[in-house]
Amino acid sequence: MTPRLVKRRSFAACCLGTVPVLRLTGQEAPHGAGRTLAREKRLSARVEIVAFEEGGRFLGAPDVRAFESEDHRNLASKFHSGVAEDIPFGAYRLEARLVAHTSDVGYVPVYGPRVTVVVGLAVGYELPLYPMVLQGRVIGPAPPHRSFVKLTGIYNSRSMESAIGPDGGFSFAGVSHGSFVLLVIGEGGILAGRTVTIPYTGPPLTIEMGRDCTMCSQ
Image (cartoon, rainbow, N blue to C red):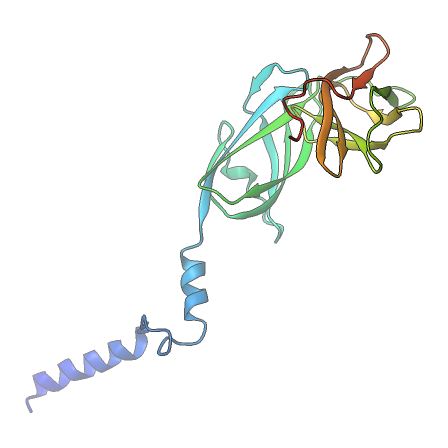
């Protein structure tokens, strides 16, 4: 054996000692190797955040103040003009705002290659001394037992529920400005619905059971 050949073998042995060999058969793979590969190939998404005024006017890209993961990493700095690339899959706490508007805070699930998030931002206004109240009544055939009314934002993530009284009445306290959907919901799904703009200044607010409702359960 020549000295040169010895050197080559020593070099090969050294390298094989430092480079992990991953086998693809399940029985031969080192314990935890699958999880290691999964972490190395962690899925990520392109996330775009757009803002509307709560009345429906498009505002464009908001200022992302926080995009915080479950392990408390804030990825807000990755957003440029409302868009961020390579956001790892997971659930995030989002805080977005624009000048002269109130901020919006919510939670965003990121589990697809492209995710679009709509936030509703209200024009900054002085809060009333007493919370705004929205009252109305469900009319027509009596809704089934255990039904309730749900108020949910069209351009924001706010949502509230109200019981239905014996006379069909419902009430929401602490509502905010904006465009909303009012839904009568029971065990069978959506039973009736309509849109409403808050502050509401029209005639007595009603939701009519039995009317044509494209959003209602069939």
